[in-house]
Image (cartoon, rainbow, N blue to C red; front, side, top):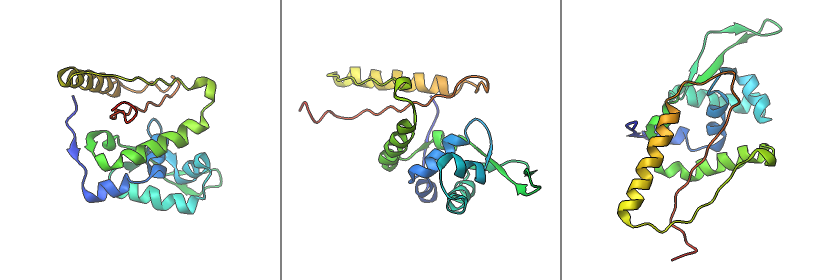
Length: 165
């Protein structure tokens, strides 16, 4: 299992934005310029630049080798460092959910595979469930990306069920 460390205040602030989390996802498998990121998000490049710079300053994005664009303009592509996977920032749970909801709203509903499960487990069995789920996520997170394969996203949330006290 990957050792996670608590996020610093600056790191936690950088991750406290669903837009920034979406930028990290966009740049996960391949580098993108600020202009490309803005186009994918449907946002103004100037406002996205602020978020991109914040992610670079805090080590979540890494600038790649400068290149020339179609009209000879200087472009800097950015790639996600996967640093966020190694951090623990419990206060960002709501931001993760917001980013997930924004992304899933853009996916065709026929391609969204969602499940919801209610459990009643004693503490030892719940600990086992959490450990096994975490190990499965770690196993797949450690696999190298296959650039030829389709990209998928997964969101898992475990919470007490307020409907069944």
